[in-house]
Length: 435
Ligand SMILES: [Zn+2]
Ligand SMILES: [Zn+2]
Image 1 (tube, rainbow, N blue to C red):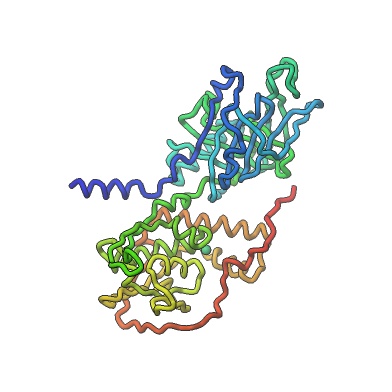
Image 2 (cartoon, rainbow, N blue to C red):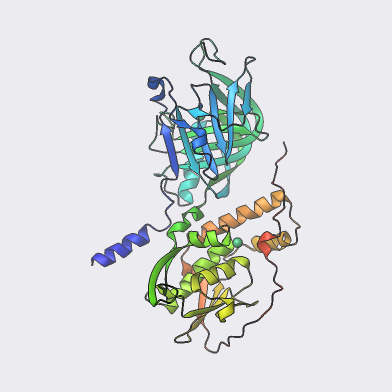
């Protein structure tokens, strides 16, 4: 009984983000009481990959925004304009931040006349896409903005540069501008890192990164918002399978380990849709070959489709190796053919028709031929992230068709002419969006 309970608990916690996704230091409502004493130095978190952060700079000397690992500090100048500089040498009385390696984009039609409308648009989308809005999350929005008011805070004491008598901040208004909004959504941190009357804290960054500030007012008339939410695929550490190997170089069978999709991501080099397809599909078949849930990697062999993602999943999960004739690559009509050696049970794994968006394959073929621009590659990456997210919210039975093969002949091919498709664009420059 107790065992069953544990299993249920384990299933229920699948696909949770490495907690917590959003971190913070200090507090908006406490900082004044502590004379804006710094609670964090920005350079102590700079090594975290794909960092996104918001907060005031120094002793209310400006605004900090970190966008995908790029730090920006905005400060009011003597002439009243705000200047943005890139530096990690910044401290903050409070800061909210998250590391998000992958985002998924959604297009939302909206008519927005204030911050509350913006909050509702984000909340509605997140709920509709199955996010738990009780857990804080960051979001990014790119759109044409009809009207915008931002501020950059100014120091509270006359001896600090940028002090403006009788003012706490400088306001900036924009008409018909475009750029990116970086925000954090939380229903539980009002007065900590969101204002007392709001669930969102948002900064604006112009496309050329020369303008940045805290958003106070916004209007978007009949616009299309591209809203990005953290990819569910970041929860790949919670997708696991058990394996069994020998316990030392001359040891006996019995070393049971748990292998997660994250482990395979490290081996492969990146997370991609192919890796998710391979891991989830092969896991489904291996659990049929090994009903006790433990894959014997000394008793399994596999044929993989030539895709670099699929071959990496194949060797990692089955222990199949070319030199022992337990692994080979062939242009088979399925993803894999996997065989249990002690009973010859053989399964073929296919992706069901219509699961994968056709555009991913057509653009993918163009990419391999170096026919996509940097920004088109970026679009393809977003499509693949969206597909990976979709896979992670579906049941394996709906994604894959696993069928027994009764007369399969193992015939290792020695072809070494396959193209490693995931390095074709390794020298492509970054996608830069012009104003
Ligand atoms: Zn702010
Ligand atoms: Zn890959």
